Length: 90
Image 1 (cartoon, helix red, strand yellow):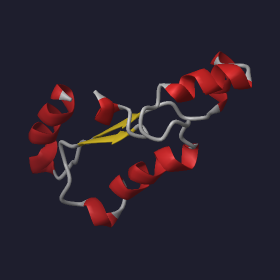
Image 2: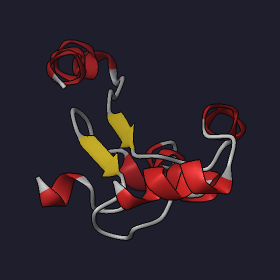
Image 3: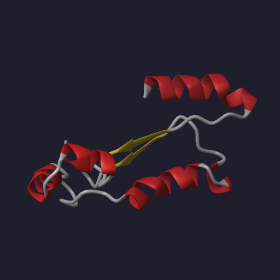
């Protein structure tokens, strides 16, 4: 986050926005390569305190698409936590 904020301040005058997306566990091919069984994925899901499930790639992509859109042109130096509520429990 320090790098995100620092770069946002440094590059802002050049109209470059810098933000961070911080995903929780997302059900991707990479995760399935690591957690090969349904049981292993269920164990990972129990660590998602809020929603108790893995995220989908589409759910993780939503905030990224928004950040790339014209609707977010005044957003810089921000962190978007897309983790199903895991950080909320800390």
